[in-house]
Length: 367
Image 1 (tube, one colour):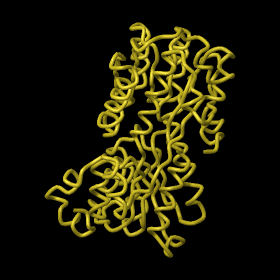
Image 2: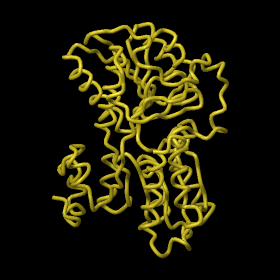
Image 3: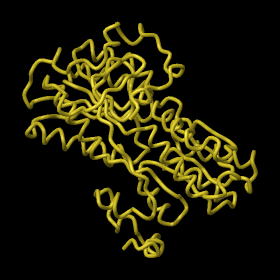
Image 4: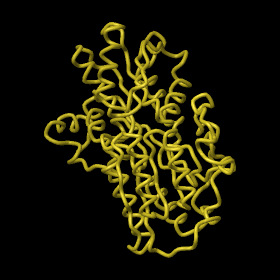
């Protein structure tokens, strides 16, 4: 992963360092053993996730992190959980509560990567280490794990071009990007544009507030009204939830059989791929990401080095050289469902191929 690509563009990250902490932050991910006292297995890990509308957080991330922390601490470690429900102010309050409760380390998936910076600084000043999970939060974070977000966007863009085939240069698409408060969304967009620009016409493009499917639905209705229902040949959607919202609007307008991208391999998204309503998703190994976050958190809480865990460094606007683990991604289509989500235990064939989808599953050999 390009290290520079992990940091959001400078113009998007103009934040006063005074608001984010002292100049020490610019030296980056601090040595995990510099301020943490050596501890045993009896540690307390604060887990702060951003929302509960995307299935992955409650279904995968939370239980996987809890399980790994238990494994790494001989069942003595405790995970204290909070979900911000897409409210950045609430998440800041949750950080304050974690500090008051004297957690040893926090795993934070920020609702708003800038708005969390002050709270990260508070944790840092209280001697609490912070692992930025899935999104590169600003402030003096100590470690980071996520996926190669620019590559995610490229993967989606390449899949959309493949689906459009020789007609791509004469095709018009709608781009449904993620929330402007999420640094990952900017990176997905960057990757997608690097592939799509000059290869296909982008008729309308939206940054979708809070990643909500209903907001994507409204955006798509606006795009259909502006462009005409016969003038949309494909949709770049940054995740599965927004793909679902977009597809609902397309179907309502009588638009079918056009490729729509996604991300997260949500069950509903996989089922839409089976039926052909959605062309692809991006499969990301949440177990690997979650386990890595737990490993980092436990090591930091115990005052141990991250050298054996982190194999990369990333920079944010406020912190340089943060120890990082970047997890690879896979393009998920109807052709590799067995080799991805089923093989990795995300879903069973029975979960995907319910009565409603059985005929479609049979058609693609998923049985």
